[in-house]
Image (cartoon, rainbow, N blue to C red; front, side, top):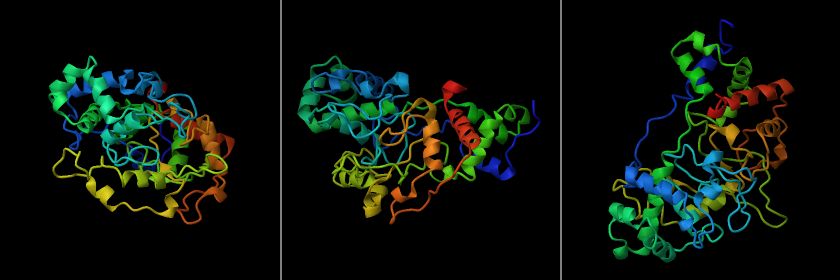
Length: 360
């Protein structure tokens, strides 16, 4: 066994910034049933039950399969029609500022609510959902948490259901990985443990935080800044339509009643509402999408907002030979061709797979 790690002191310091993992859990003050055991159990049951679709055709789990890291292997999600975007994983969502590829929600319960009433997805309206829950086996648990459903406005029932889903989704966190063991060993100055981390993965990590500058967007314990960037992926849906990305997400967000600045927020202090109050739309938001977390990334193929890249090798090659002509001229200029060697591509993939528990 070799006697030392490959990383410099500065690289070790940067590596420590990716942890510790998992982060401490904090209840969501905007959701009064956050971290409530009964709400979590009800949310999990509803997540797996087609009662949340108007005709009982499918459940949340139909598109977010727990056996596939809460995604599906298809490039684009299939609701009642083929949707425009890839199905994102539902792991590690607690405590984010923005949700969805375009950031159309600023809290997890709103992100849970929208698919229930989207016509192309579960297609309920507030009245039909209230009827479905009233006639379901979940009515007793619902009323333990929220009181008599018959005296509640239908929209309140909708929000309460979304908040039980959110309470469950908050619990979906990925486990420690081989990378985390390496990172913690470095922090503890346990050389014997640290040197067991593969050399290829160490070289890939050096590229990730060095010449590749992946860390600019994929930073912190989640390996994501949770903000919006143009990754050089085409956003035209066809010859006449585009996916507006963050621009469309902001149009939705700023007209939504379900934000942290709205009346459905259970937090009297409106923590976090400053973000939606101050965000502004810009033309450069067109075609930008939220940076996904890289935790569990080897389990969530295909990749990018439209599922256009089939595996991690393809993702690395995309950034290695990125077409800078596709990037916004009036946006941020943070990407350029990396021109990676075959060995460097293999090393970056080797690093990324150590961020997934299944390969530990």
